[in-house]
Image 1 (tube, rainbow, N blue to C red):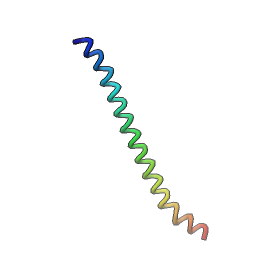
Image 2 (spheres, helix red, strand yellow):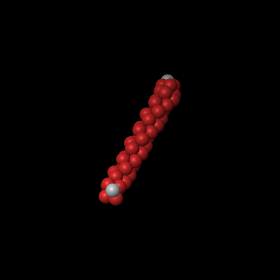
Image 3 (tube, rainbow, N blue to C red):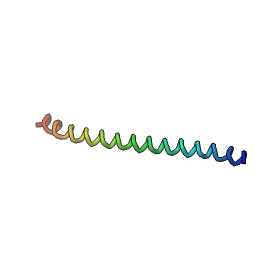
Image 4 (cartoon, helix red, strand yellow):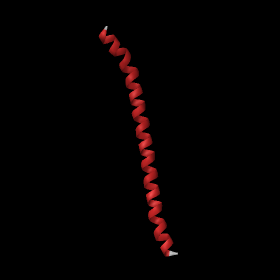
Length: 52
């Protein structure tokens, strides 16, 4: 029993850390994509206006 618990606890910790990091990466990628889309929408007309 104790050996099973000692084996399961590290595995559970690894799963939690890996899952949390995956969620963090997904959030970072979504935020980056949103910021890029916003900068493209804001930068397009202003850049064209500056060239004209």
